[in-house]
Amino acid sequence: MEIIKCKSYRDLSLQVGIDIEYQVSRNSKLVLGLATGSTPKGVYEYLKSSTVDFSEVRTFNLDEYVGLEPEFNSRLKGKKGYGVPKHKQSYYYFMNEHLFNEVKFKRSFFPGESQSDTYDSLIDACGGIDIQILGIGTNGHIAFNEPGTSRDSLTHVVDLTENTIKDNSRFFDSIDEVPKQATTMGIESIMRAKQIYLLANGKHKKDILEKACYGDITSDIPASYLQEHKNIKVLYCD
Ligand code: GLP
Image (cartoon, rainbow, N blue to C red; front, side):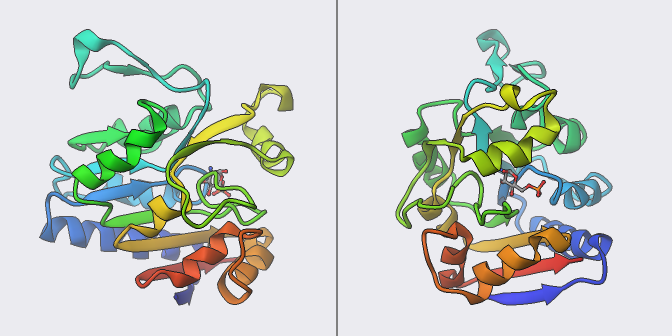
């Protein structure tokens, strides 16, 4: 793991954004693994200002809440308006708002759109993920792989922990509205990415990040599995 302390959130976002831009300029068919949450927003802001052509790039999102998947109008397949977000807190809505409405990619996929066990095959069929962006939950989850998830997990449906439901309730009108399940890429799905950026912003992530990077590799802290990845950069700031 290469661990980099950034001067600021802007600095962190620029470092990742510039690298993605550079890699896309060298390989127009790059496959990106994307994350939601507040942490990657700065990277997406940067990409929105880029002049690089993303029209051949395909993206795979890490996760989506069960029940909040978009509705699809089959008559508009491949065209504008094909997917309609069902809820403002769906990750599909988030990605449209923060990136997809402005940066045009070839195709963007979400787990839960099809059977979860076909998501990994779809990633394989596209040649695998070249760059995967990850945030980290305060309990050490990556995507929605909660403590206890096994190392060899592929895309699957999970029951969210009380901790995650509470953390994510800040985005909903009440805690009762937070979905109790999500479809998520598994640990093995994530570890197959050729390159990973694990991002953490804020003092409240410091403890868990330290455990994930320097502690034992354990299913109690799913992010600790990332220590075994051959090409991972961890960027963090206070
Ligand atoms: C959610 C997402 C994760 C994300 C985490 C942290 O639980 N499923 O992929 O890493 O939130 O979010 P934030 O970046 O807002 O702290």
